[in-house]
Length: 71
Image (cartoon, rainbow, N blue to C red; front, side, top):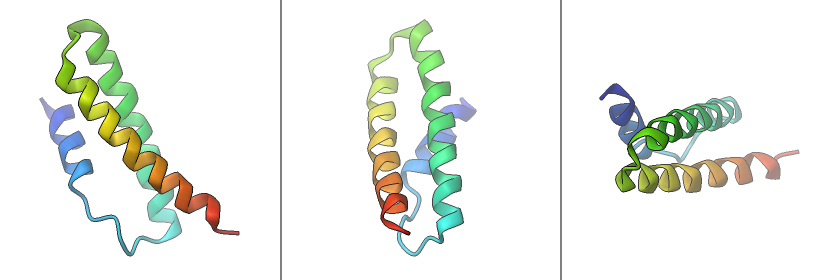
């Protein structure tokens, strides 16, 4: 599944040394991945998808927290 590969690549990406625009793009990508995984989860009820969504959500929150610290 291409969606699972994208989500795994997103999780394993290096998060240090990112510019502000990179963080904005990563946050948007995380949101899109979470929503896509949620649609699949609604149909399959696979717990591994839920775990992946939770991990991506944690990364997304960290990115957004860092974005909000900037003036």
